[in-house]
Length: 463
Image (cartoon, rainbow, N blue to C red; front, side):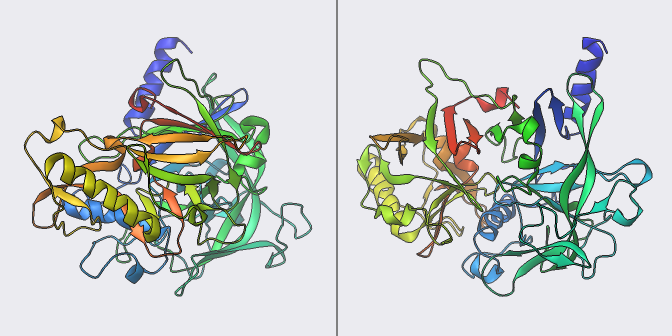
Protein backbone atom coordinates (compact mmCIF):
# COMPACT_ATOMS: atom_id res chain seq x y z
CA UNK A 1 0.00 0.00 0.00
CA UNK A 2 1.40 3.42 -0.96
CA UNK A 3 1.87 6.18 1.57
CA UNK A 4 -0.92 8.11 -0.15
CA UNK A 5 -3.34 5.20 0.25
CA UNK A 6 -2.31 4.77 3.88
CA UNK A 7 -2.95 8.47 4.50
CA UNK A 8 -6.39 8.25 2.85
CA UNK A 9 -7.30 5.23 4.98
CA UNK A 10 -6.11 6.95 8.16
CA UNK A 11 -8.05 10.14 7.39
CA UNK A 12 -11.17 8.09 6.65
CA UNK A 13 -10.95 6.31 10.00
CA UNK A 14 -10.46 9.60 11.79
CA UNK A 15 -13.38 11.15 9.89
CA UNK A 16 -15.84 8.51 11.05
CA UNK A 17 -14.53 8.86 14.59
CA UNK A 18 -13.50 5.24 14.99
CA UNK A 19 -9.96 3.91 14.76
CA UNK A 20 -10.17 0.64 16.60
CA UNK A 21 -7.34 -1.48 17.97
CA UNK A 22 -4.15 -1.25 15.94
CA UNK A 23 -1.07 -3.43 16.33
CA UNK A 24 2.51 -2.74 15.30
CA UNK A 25 5.06 -5.38 16.15
CA UNK A 26 4.74 -5.34 19.94
CA UNK A 27 2.41 -2.35 20.18
CA UNK A 28 -1.32 -1.72 20.12
CA UNK A 29 -3.37 1.44 20.08
CA UNK A 30 -7.05 2.31 20.13
CA UNK A 31 -9.18 5.36 19.76
CA UNK A 32 -10.62 6.95 22.88
CA UNK A 33 -14.00 8.02 21.51
CA UNK A 34 -15.83 10.55 23.72
CA UNK A 35 -19.15 9.23 24.94
CA UNK A 36 -20.83 12.38 23.63
CA UNK A 37 -19.58 11.78 20.06
CA UNK A 38 -22.39 12.37 17.57
CA UNK A 39 -21.43 9.09 15.87
CA UNK A 40 -22.53 7.18 18.96
CA UNK A 41 -25.74 9.19 19.49
CA UNK A 42 -25.69 8.42 23.21
CA UNK A 43 -25.96 12.07 24.18
CA UNK A 44 -28.77 13.91 22.35
CA UNK A 45 -27.49 16.93 20.45
CA UNK A 46 -30.47 18.96 21.65
CA UNK A 47 -29.17 19.02 25.23
CA UNK A 48 -28.64 22.49 26.64
CA UNK A 49 -25.25 23.46 28.05
CA UNK A 50 -26.65 22.99 31.54
CA UNK A 51 -28.01 19.52 30.72
CA UNK A 52 -24.70 18.44 29.18
CA UNK A 53 -22.89 19.52 32.31
CA UNK A 54 -25.24 17.51 34.50
CA UNK A 55 -24.76 14.51 32.22
CA UNK A 56 -20.99 14.60 32.75
CA UNK A 57 -21.47 15.19 36.46
CA UNK A 58 -23.54 12.01 36.52
CA UNK A 59 -20.74 10.07 34.86
CA UNK A 60 -18.32 11.12 37.59
CA UNK A 61 -20.63 10.40 40.48
CA UNK A 62 -21.99 7.17 39.02
CA UNK A 63 -18.49 5.80 39.45
CA UNK A 64 -18.63 6.68 43.14
CA UNK A 65 -22.23 5.75 43.95
CA UNK A 66 -24.76 3.43 42.35
CA UNK A 67 -27.99 5.09 43.41
CA UNK A 68 -29.13 8.18 41.59
CA UNK A 69 -30.54 9.82 44.70
CA UNK A 70 -26.94 9.90 46.03
CA UNK A 71 -25.57 11.64 42.95
CA UNK A 72 -26.57 15.24 43.54
CA UNK A 73 -28.74 17.40 45.77
CA UNK A 74 -32.44 17.38 44.90
CA UNK A 75 -32.11 20.65 43.03
CA UNK A 76 -29.90 19.00 40.39
CA UNK A 77 -31.83 17.28 37.63
CA UNK A 78 -30.60 15.65 34.43
CA UNK A 79 -32.39 14.00 31.50
CA UNK A 80 -29.68 11.34 31.41
CA UNK A 81 -28.90 9.04 34.29
CA UNK A 82 -26.00 6.70 33.53
CA UNK A 83 -25.75 4.10 36.24
CA UNK A 84 -22.50 2.68 34.89
CA UNK A 85 -20.58 5.05 32.70
CA UNK A 86 -17.22 6.25 31.46
CA UNK A 87 -16.11 9.32 29.57
CA UNK A 88 -14.59 7.29 26.73
CA UNK A 89 -15.79 4.49 24.48
CA UNK A 90 -13.87 2.25 22.09
CA UNK A 91 -14.80 -0.43 19.56
CA UNK A 92 -13.89 -4.10 19.66
CA UNK A 93 -13.91 -6.70 16.87
CA UNK A 94 -14.48 -10.31 17.84
CA UNK A 95 -15.69 -13.51 16.21
CA UNK A 96 -15.37 -14.83 12.67
CA UNK A 97 -17.40 -14.71 9.48
CA UNK A 98 -21.13 -14.12 9.66
CA UNK A 99 -21.08 -14.01 13.47
CA UNK A 100 -18.35 -11.34 13.68
CA UNK A 101 -19.31 -8.68 16.22
CA UNK A 102 -18.00 -5.12 16.51
CA UNK A 103 -19.52 -3.57 19.62
CA UNK A 104 -18.81 -0.30 21.33
CA UNK A 105 -17.68 -0.71 24.93
CA UNK A 106 -16.80 1.67 27.74
CA UNK A 107 -13.06 2.18 28.19
CA UNK A 108 -12.65 1.69 31.93
CA UNK A 109 -9.45 1.84 33.97
CA UNK A 110 -11.56 0.82 36.97
CA UNK A 111 -12.67 -2.58 35.64
CA UNK A 112 -10.80 -5.87 35.52
CA UNK A 113 -12.79 -7.88 32.99
CA UNK A 114 -13.76 -7.09 29.43
CA UNK A 115 -17.35 -8.17 28.84
CA UNK A 116 -20.20 -7.76 26.37
CA UNK A 117 -23.85 -8.72 26.51
CA UNK A 118 -24.68 -11.97 24.70
CA UNK A 119 -27.73 -13.41 23.00
CA UNK A 120 -30.03 -15.34 25.29
CA UNK A 121 -29.58 -12.93 28.18
CA UNK A 122 -32.41 -12.72 30.68
CA UNK A 123 -32.77 -10.14 32.05
CA UNK A 124 -30.90 -7.88 29.61
CA UNK A 125 -30.12 -4.20 29.38
CA UNK A 126 -31.42 -2.43 26.29
CA UNK A 127 -29.11 -2.98 23.28
CA UNK A 128 -29.73 -3.11 19.54
CA UNK A 129 -27.57 -6.19 18.97
CA UNK A 130 -26.08 -8.79 21.33
CA UNK A 131 -23.19 -11.15 20.60
CA UNK A 132 -24.41 -14.45 19.09
CA UNK A 133 -21.84 -16.56 20.91
CA UNK A 134 -23.67 -19.87 20.36
CA UNK A 135 -23.40 -19.42 16.59
CA UNK A 136 -19.72 -18.43 16.63
CA UNK A 137 -17.39 -21.17 15.36
CA UNK A 138 -14.45 -19.55 17.19
CA UNK A 139 -16.11 -19.28 20.60
CA UNK A 140 -15.33 -21.79 23.35
CA UNK A 141 -16.31 -21.86 26.99
CA UNK A 142 -13.67 -21.62 29.69
CA UNK A 143 -13.58 -24.60 32.05
CA UNK A 144 -13.91 -24.09 35.78
CA UNK A 145 -10.47 -25.76 35.98
CA UNK A 146 -8.86 -23.16 33.71
CA UNK A 147 -6.23 -20.95 35.34
CA UNK A 148 -8.22 -17.90 34.26
CA UNK A 149 -11.24 -19.18 36.16
CA UNK A 150 -10.32 -17.34 39.32
CA UNK A 151 -12.33 -16.88 41.40
CA UNK A 152 -13.74 -20.35 40.70
CA UNK A 153 -17.30 -19.45 39.82
CA UNK A 154 -19.52 -21.79 37.84
CA UNK A 155 -22.14 -20.80 35.29
CA UNK A 156 -24.12 -23.45 33.42
CA UNK A 157 -21.36 -26.03 33.85
CA UNK A 158 -18.46 -23.79 32.80
CA UNK A 159 -16.48 -20.89 34.24
CA UNK A 160 -18.66 -17.97 35.21
CA UNK A 161 -18.34 -14.45 36.52
CA UNK A 162 -20.41 -12.04 38.53
CA UNK A 163 -19.61 -8.38 38.94
CA UNK A 164 -21.19 -6.11 41.52
CA UNK A 165 -20.77 -2.39 40.93
CA UNK A 166 -21.20 -0.27 44.03
CA UNK A 167 -21.87 -1.20 47.63
CA UNK A 168 -25.42 0.06 48.18
CA UNK A 169 -28.81 -1.19 47.10
CA UNK A 170 -30.13 -1.34 44.45
CA UNK A 171 -27.04 -3.18 43.26
CA UNK A 172 -25.72 -3.02 39.70
CA UNK A 173 -24.97 -6.55 38.59
CA UNK A 174 -23.62 -8.29 35.50
CA UNK A 175 -23.05 -12.04 35.36
CA UNK A 176 -22.63 -14.82 32.83
CA UNK A 177 -19.97 -17.16 31.52
CA UNK A 178 -16.34 -16.73 30.66
CA UNK A 179 -15.53 -17.66 27.07
CA UNK A 180 -12.62 -17.50 24.65
CA UNK A 181 -12.96 -15.80 21.31
CA UNK A 182 -10.84 -14.52 18.45
CA UNK A 183 -10.28 -10.76 18.66
CA UNK A 184 -9.13 -8.81 15.60
CA UNK A 185 -6.82 -5.82 15.80
CA UNK A 186 -5.75 -3.80 12.78
CA UNK A 187 -2.01 -3.86 12.06
CA UNK A 188 -0.82 -0.31 11.51
CA UNK A 189 2.04 -1.46 9.26
CA UNK A 190 0.17 -3.81 6.93
CA UNK A 191 -3.38 -2.46 7.35
CA UNK A 192 -4.51 -6.07 7.73
CA UNK A 193 -6.73 -7.29 10.50
CA UNK A 194 -4.59 -9.54 12.68
CA UNK A 195 -6.36 -12.31 14.59
CA UNK A 196 -5.63 -13.05 18.24
CA UNK A 197 -7.48 -16.29 19.05
CA UNK A 198 -8.37 -17.63 22.44
CA UNK A 199 -8.72 -14.39 24.41
CA UNK A 200 -10.93 -14.73 27.47
CA UNK A 201 -13.78 -12.30 28.09
CA UNK A 202 -17.12 -12.15 29.84
CA UNK A 203 -20.34 -13.08 28.06
CA UNK A 204 -23.06 -11.36 30.10
CA UNK A 205 -26.31 -13.32 30.28
CA UNK A 206 -27.89 -11.66 33.31
CA UNK A 207 -27.88 -8.01 34.25
CA UNK A 208 -29.65 -5.93 36.83
CA UNK A 209 -29.89 -2.14 36.99
CA UNK A 210 -27.35 -1.74 34.17
CA UNK A 211 -27.99 1.38 32.08
CA UNK A 212 -25.51 2.91 29.64
CA UNK A 213 -27.97 5.67 28.85
CA UNK A 214 -31.12 7.00 30.45
CA UNK A 215 -33.58 4.39 31.66
CA UNK A 216 -36.10 5.39 29.01
CA UNK A 217 -33.59 5.84 26.16
CA UNK A 218 -33.77 3.57 23.10
CA UNK A 219 -31.02 2.71 20.65
CA UNK A 220 -28.22 2.11 23.14
CA UNK A 221 -25.01 1.08 21.33
CA UNK A 222 -22.78 0.36 24.33
CA UNK A 223 -22.54 -3.40 24.75
CA UNK A 224 -20.25 -3.68 27.77
CA UNK A 225 -16.92 -2.70 29.28
CA UNK A 226 -13.28 -2.90 28.23
CA UNK A 227 -11.36 -3.38 31.48
CA UNK A 228 -7.87 -1.91 31.78
CA UNK A 229 -6.56 -3.04 35.15
CA UNK A 230 -3.69 -5.50 35.49
CA UNK A 231 -5.86 -8.45 36.52
CA UNK A 232 -4.95 -11.80 34.83
CA UNK A 233 -8.32 -11.79 33.03
CA UNK A 234 -7.84 -8.33 31.52
CA UNK A 235 -6.84 -8.08 27.87
CA UNK A 236 -3.94 -5.90 28.99
CA UNK A 237 -2.48 -8.99 30.69
CA UNK A 238 -3.64 -11.62 28.19
CA UNK A 239 -1.92 -9.66 25.43
CA UNK A 240 1.19 -9.01 27.50
CA UNK A 241 3.46 -10.08 24.62
CA UNK A 242 2.15 -7.00 22.82
CA UNK A 243 1.29 -4.66 25.69
CA UNK A 244 4.09 -5.46 28.18
CA UNK A 245 1.61 -4.20 30.77
CA UNK A 246 2.10 -0.62 29.56
CA UNK A 247 -0.28 1.98 28.19
CA UNK A 248 -0.10 5.71 27.52
CA UNK A 249 -2.65 8.41 26.79
CA UNK A 250 -2.76 12.19 26.49
CA UNK A 251 -6.19 13.87 26.75
CA UNK A 252 -6.73 17.10 24.76
CA UNK A 253 -8.88 19.91 26.16
CA UNK A 254 -12.52 20.11 25.14
CA UNK A 255 -13.34 22.41 22.22
CA UNK A 256 -16.52 24.49 22.57
CA UNK A 257 -17.69 22.19 25.39
CA UNK A 258 -17.25 19.13 23.15
CA UNK A 259 -14.86 16.42 24.25
CA UNK A 260 -12.03 15.65 21.87
CA UNK A 261 -11.00 12.23 20.63
CA UNK A 262 -7.69 10.81 21.76
CA UNK A 263 -5.64 7.63 21.46
CA UNK A 264 -4.46 5.13 24.01
CA UNK A 265 -1.19 3.37 23.17
CA UNK A 266 0.04 0.00 24.44
CA UNK A 267 3.36 -1.82 24.61
CA UNK A 268 6.14 -0.48 22.41
CA UNK A 269 3.85 2.31 21.25
CA UNK A 270 3.42 3.53 24.84
CA UNK A 271 6.23 6.06 25.08
CA UNK A 272 6.67 9.20 27.14
CA UNK A 273 9.26 11.91 26.49
CA UNK A 274 10.15 15.28 27.97
CA UNK A 275 12.73 17.99 27.49
CA UNK A 276 14.57 20.62 29.49
CA UNK A 277 11.36 22.44 30.40
CA UNK A 278 9.03 19.43 30.59
CA UNK A 279 10.50 16.89 32.93
CA UNK A 280 9.09 13.36 33.02
CA UNK A 281 8.33 12.42 36.62
CA UNK A 282 7.62 8.94 37.96
CA UNK A 283 5.79 7.82 41.08
CA UNK A 284 4.74 4.46 42.47
CA UNK A 285 1.32 3.03 41.67
CA UNK A 286 -0.78 0.32 43.29
CA UNK A 287 -2.86 -1.73 40.87
CA UNK A 288 -5.98 -3.16 42.44
CA UNK A 289 -9.56 -2.61 41.34
CA UNK A 290 -8.31 0.93 40.63
CA UNK A 291 -4.94 2.57 40.07
CA UNK A 292 -3.91 4.11 43.39
CA UNK A 293 -1.29 6.85 43.70
CA UNK A 294 0.62 7.98 46.83
CA UNK A 295 -0.88 11.44 47.29
CA UNK A 296 0.56 13.05 50.42
CA UNK A 297 -0.93 16.54 50.33
CA UNK A 298 -2.35 19.47 48.38
CA UNK A 299 -1.11 23.06 48.12
CA UNK A 300 -2.55 26.24 46.65
CA UNK A 301 0.15 28.52 45.25
CA UNK A 302 2.79 26.59 47.22
CA UNK A 303 0.95 26.94 50.56
CA UNK A 304 0.21 23.54 52.07
CA UNK A 305 -3.42 22.95 53.01
CA UNK A 306 -4.37 21.58 56.46
CA UNK A 307 -5.50 18.14 55.30
CA UNK A 308 -4.97 14.91 57.19
CA UNK A 309 -2.91 12.83 54.71
CA UNK A 310 -4.41 9.59 56.03
CA UNK A 311 -7.51 10.26 53.88
CA UNK A 312 -5.32 9.62 50.82
CA UNK A 313 -3.65 6.43 52.07
CA UNK A 314 -4.21 3.23 50.16
CA UNK A 315 -5.44 0.38 52.32
CA UNK A 316 -6.04 -2.87 50.46
CA UNK A 317 -9.71 -3.78 50.52
CA UNK A 318 -10.80 -0.36 51.84
CA UNK A 319 -12.48 1.54 49.01
CA UNK A 320 -13.50 4.52 51.15
CA UNK A 321 -10.01 6.03 51.12
CA UNK A 322 -7.08 6.40 48.79
CA UNK A 323 -6.29 8.50 45.73
CA UNK A 324 -7.07 7.01 42.32
CA UNK A 325 -6.45 8.20 38.79
CA UNK A 326 -9.47 7.53 36.60
CA UNK A 327 -9.80 8.67 32.99
CA UNK A 328 -13.39 7.39 33.03
CA UNK A 329 -14.46 10.05 35.54
CA UNK A 330 -15.09 13.47 34.05
CA UNK A 331 -14.12 15.58 37.06
CA UNK A 332 -11.99 15.16 40.15
CA UNK A 333 -13.64 14.30 43.45
CA UNK A 334 -12.49 15.16 46.98
CA UNK A 335 -13.87 14.08 50.34
CA UNK A 336 -15.08 17.12 52.27
CA UNK A 337 -12.19 16.98 54.74
CA UNK A 338 -9.92 17.79 51.78
CA UNK A 339 -12.37 19.78 49.66
CA UNK A 340 -13.26 22.37 52.32
CA UNK A 341 -9.64 23.53 52.91
CA UNK A 342 -9.12 23.72 49.14
CA UNK A 343 -12.29 25.73 48.67
CA UNK A 344 -11.35 28.14 51.46
CA UNK A 345 -7.93 28.74 49.92
CA UNK A 346 -9.40 29.46 46.48
CA UNK A 347 -12.02 31.80 47.94
CA UNK A 348 -9.30 33.67 49.86
CA UNK A 349 -7.15 34.02 46.73
CA UNK A 350 -9.91 35.62 44.65
CA UNK A 351 -11.09 37.81 47.53
CA UNK A 352 -7.58 39.13 48.25
CA UNK A 353 -6.60 39.54 44.59
CA UNK A 354 -9.79 40.92 43.02
CA UNK A 355 -12.35 41.31 45.81
CA UNK A 356 -14.47 38.60 44.13
CA UNK A 357 -17.02 36.65 46.13
CA UNK A 358 -18.61 33.30 45.18
CA UNK A 359 -21.99 33.32 43.44
CA UNK A 360 -24.80 30.79 43.54
CA UNK A 361 -24.58 28.67 40.44
CA UNK A 362 -27.53 26.26 40.47
CA UNK A 363 -24.97 23.60 39.54
CA UNK A 364 -23.34 20.63 41.23
CA UNK A 365 -20.19 22.74 41.49
CA UNK A 366 -20.56 24.89 44.57
CA UNK A 367 -17.61 27.24 43.98
CA UNK A 368 -18.55 29.55 41.13
CA UNK A 369 -18.06 33.21 40.28
CA UNK A 370 -19.80 35.66 38.00
CA UNK A 371 -18.05 36.43 34.72
CA UNK A 372 -16.01 39.55 35.23
CA UNK A 373 -14.49 41.86 32.63
CA UNK A 374 -11.02 40.80 31.50
CA UNK A 375 -11.59 37.31 32.91
CA UNK A 376 -9.02 35.84 30.51
CA UNK A 377 -6.39 38.34 31.62
CA UNK A 378 -6.57 37.53 35.32
CA UNK A 379 -4.09 35.44 37.25
CA UNK A 380 -5.60 32.28 38.69
CA UNK A 381 -4.22 30.13 41.50
CA UNK A 382 -2.37 26.89 40.90
CA UNK A 383 -3.23 23.73 42.82
CA UNK A 384 -0.31 21.38 43.45
CA UNK A 385 -0.79 17.69 44.13
CA UNK A 386 2.13 16.32 46.15
CA UNK A 387 3.12 12.67 45.73
CA UNK A 388 5.63 10.60 47.63
CA UNK A 389 8.62 9.87 45.44
CA UNK A 390 9.77 6.34 44.74
CA UNK A 391 12.72 6.61 47.13
CA UNK A 392 10.54 8.27 49.82
CA UNK A 393 12.86 11.31 49.87
CA UNK A 394 11.08 14.53 49.05
CA UNK A 395 7.92 14.80 46.95
CA UNK A 396 6.94 14.92 43.30
CA UNK A 397 4.46 17.60 42.23
CA UNK A 398 1.68 17.60 39.66
CA UNK A 399 0.76 21.24 39.03
CA UNK A 400 -2.83 21.98 38.01
CA UNK A 401 -3.35 25.35 36.31
CA UNK A 402 -6.49 27.24 35.31
CA UNK A 403 -7.23 24.91 32.37
CA UNK A 404 -7.34 21.98 34.80
CA UNK A 405 -9.40 23.70 37.48
CA UNK A 406 -11.85 26.24 36.07
CA UNK A 407 -14.16 26.64 33.13
CA UNK A 408 -17.04 28.89 32.11
CA UNK A 409 -20.40 27.15 32.45
CA UNK A 410 -24.04 28.09 31.98
CA UNK A 411 -26.68 27.26 34.56
CA UNK A 412 -30.34 26.45 33.93
CA UNK A 413 -31.21 30.16 33.98
CA UNK A 414 -28.79 30.92 31.14
CA UNK A 415 -26.40 32.72 33.49
CA UNK A 416 -22.69 32.24 32.87
CA UNK A 417 -20.36 31.44 35.72
CA UNK A 418 -16.82 30.19 35.95
CA UNK A 419 -16.57 27.30 38.37
CA UNK A 420 -13.97 25.11 39.99
CA UNK A 421 -14.52 21.73 38.34
CA UNK A 422 -14.01 19.58 41.42
CA UNK A 423 -16.84 17.79 43.20
CA UNK A 424 -17.12 17.18 46.98
CA UNK A 425 -18.37 13.95 48.53
CA UNK A 426 -19.01 13.01 52.13
CA UNK A 427 -16.23 11.54 54.26
CA UNK A 428 -14.89 8.95 54.07
CA UNK A 429 -14.50 8.81 50.33
CA UNK A 430 -11.99 8.16 47.61
CA UNK A 431 -10.11 11.04 46.04
CA UNK A 432 -10.33 10.86 42.25
CA UNK A 433 -8.21 12.58 39.60
CA UNK A 434 -10.67 12.86 36.71
CA UNK A 435 -10.09 13.41 33.00
CA UNK A 436 -10.78 17.17 33.15
CA UNK A 437 -7.79 17.53 35.46
CA UNK A 438 -5.67 15.24 33.26
CA UNK A 439 -5.82 17.33 30.08
CA UNK A 440 -2.50 18.23 28.46
CA UNK A 441 -0.56 15.70 30.50
CA UNK A 442 0.90 12.53 29.07
CA UNK A 443 0.42 9.56 31.42
CA UNK A 444 2.35 6.30 31.09
CA UNK A 445 1.05 3.38 33.16
CA UNK A 446 3.74 0.76 33.72
CA UNK A 447 1.49 -1.74 35.45
CA UNK A 448 3.93 -4.62 35.84
CA UNK A 449 6.51 -2.35 37.49
CA UNK A 450 3.89 -0.44 39.53
CA UNK A 451 4.91 2.95 38.16
CA UNK A 452 3.07 5.94 36.73
CA UNK A 453 5.00 8.56 34.76
CA UNK A 454 3.62 11.92 33.66
CA UNK A 455 4.76 14.98 31.75
CA UNK A 456 3.09 18.23 30.55
CA UNK A 457 2.16 17.73 26.90
CA UNK A 458 0.33 19.48 24.06
CA UNK A 459 -2.20 16.68 23.64
CA UNK A 460 -4.21 18.19 20.80
CA UNK A 461 -1.28 17.60 18.44
CA UNK A 462 -1.02 13.93 19.44
CA UNK A 463 -4.57 12.66 18.93
